[in-house]
Image (cartoon, rainbow, N blue to C red):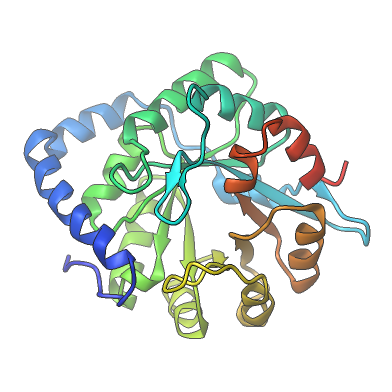
Length: 281
């Protein structure tokens, strides 16, 4: 598989680091080692099915599912999670608060995440919630089949694929590889061309990122603009810029079936109360 596309944005800096990381990981943790780990992992949970359950009641009726995100830092905002906040405990709070799925940002250099953190959360939640836990989404800048197998080997039930980084054939191939391993996918788009690419590749869960990759400004109008291009059989996920119940209502009115919220939760102080607010309780 060829490498990721240039975007002319900050993503290019991240991807340059991810290329170097990939070369190192292929040496340090070869595919056979990943596949051995994968054989020891429980089967992946149904990501799309969990999202279709809905959870957040809205004043005008209907329900919106919630993907709650474990995100230590970001390039634009710096450190987000307070020092001493345990990612496993945070994921437990999300689970107790009714999250339909949990996103774990695993990129190391720019977001201070790790693939090990994803596995720790998987093990911790399985131990605490023997009756069942939300599916885990690996959120990272993935562009190679190695990344897909790595995600499954460390406990991911689903992966994020960013349409801006991939051409149509690459996106199709990675979607197929994830499906072959039993994983779900969330395909992220930023504009009409990327939306068409996602739909043509067969994505059924499509996320609209409301953050402009060039300016880092957030605009919920992006979800409102792109929602009309999502086929009826697909789920629309609104990402970034969602901080209040009013924001949830706005993107839901535009057609979002799911919201993905990270920064507003990890910086809230009282995560459980913030989840209740987003749930409209």
